[in-house]
Length: 148
Image (cartoon, rainbow, N blue to C red; front, side, top):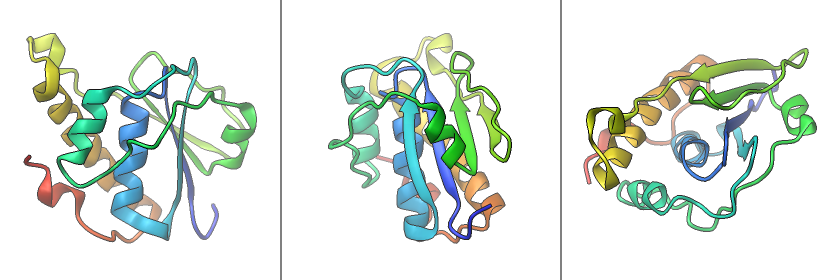
């Protein structure tokens, strides 16, 4: 693994969960890791509720755009994290691939910004664990200020 680990977050559209994970990880560890995100079938714009839920905790991803996943992106990463069950990444030698099954509050009838806050908090917990596992020292604790 690189001295400064390269982490790639992947979901299907790269409009919500993978963008949230990348934003939270970047905010949490600063320059201690190189963080990016992509989608297996990239959408055209970010999920506005994802953007809003991160803004509530001081993380601004509003300038991001969905990006299509490439094989080179996977090769260049030390760790690839897929979010959800729909995104799949083919294994590449030397790259660790993890899958995070994130909470889906809509299955319990929770929608809108309340849903996105719960998803954000779940992803933030995963981010903290991954950063610790990678030895990437936190710049600030993303879990400390997750209440809007």
